[in-house]
Structures are given as C-alpha cells and as structure tokens.
Image (cartoon, rainbow over all chains, first blue to last red; front, side, top):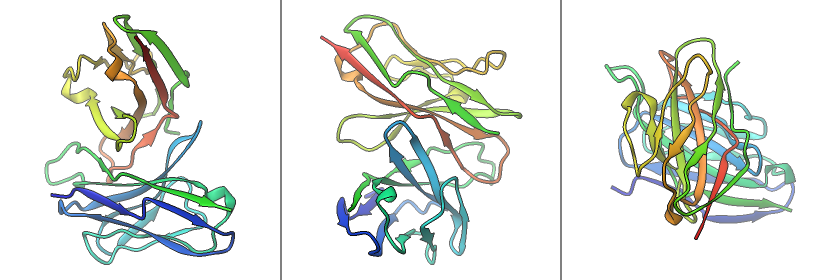
Length: 117
Length: 111
C-alpha cells in the first residue's frame, strides 16, 4: 500500500490564484481530513469527511473548499489564494469510529508546502 | 471547549537525561489522548495513545484526569528522539475522528 499520498510537494502561488491540493489513500479509509501546520499554532483542522459524499468544516475552513466524490480522494481547493494561506498542509485518513471501533490511528501524508506571494 | 496545551515550544536535554513533555487538556467528557511525533523530513505518525497503556520507543504517558494532563516521559533520552511532538485529543463517543492538536514541542537531544 502507498498509504496516504499528497501532490504536489511544493507550490508557490501568487495572491488571487486558485489551485487544488491532491490527497489520495489506498487503505479504504472512510475518514479523511485536511490540516494546516503553522509555527506556534500546531495542526489545525480545515475540513474533514466521514465518507464519500459527506464533508464538514473544521476549525479554520474559510478560504478552502473540499469534496469527496470517491472513498480514495479528498482534494482541497484554494479558490483565491492569500498570503495568510502560506503553510504546510497535511492530509490524514483513518477508519471511522463505529462498527465496534473505539479508536483508530490517523495516517498522515507527507505534506504540501505552499507559499503564497 | 476542547483544548490541548503544550506549554513548551522547545525542550533541550542531554543524551541520557530524563525527558518529560507536558500536555494539558480541557474537555468536559471522557477524552482520548494521543501523542504524535514528526521526525525531521518524515510525516507525522502516531507514537502512543492512552487507552493502549503501552511503551513505545521507551516513551510512556499516563492520563491523569484529576490534573487533566497526559505528559510524555522517557527515563533516558536518545539523540534519535529529537523530533517535534504533538499531543492530541479526541472526544470519546463522538461520531467522528476529529483530533484537536496542541501547538507542539520540539525536543532536541544534545550529544
């Protein structure tokens, strides 16, 4: 298994440009999420999904859109990039709670380092 | 409100010295607590979780509900322990796997 993969690894955007950060997992995990990592702020949840067709907002959703058309993919879209969105973005996946599961490890991707000028 | 506090941004110790990375949480119900670690140029990965009560790479962490703490400890630090450590919380019984992370502590083990 490749686990959780993210593309691209690095990206530089100009203010106002749009782009999509890709995330895919091959573990048949129901739950997927996006975090941003900033110095002194830790990891903050942007959006998450508990299954195909279902998404919800996390702590810092403004400026980002997501969709979940398949179990495997969970792209993150920046509609109009701003310098405040300069960050490292991590995608994570895990089995959902329920079905007798009390807890499950979240598996993280390698991250995408985004700079907005 | 759910909150995780890691008061130290940086903890520097010498090889062989004991290590304690502090984590305090705020949660009204029964939380699940985790420690995640990120080594240099590697992805974030689970180190341990309180319900497992296990020792991973010599690290242990005990959930203290009275003090609302989940400090990470190791009796003798090794240079390869140098990494960024994140404490995380999830509300038990919730419908999702949402994790709330602390701001992280960078552990630097000096030779």
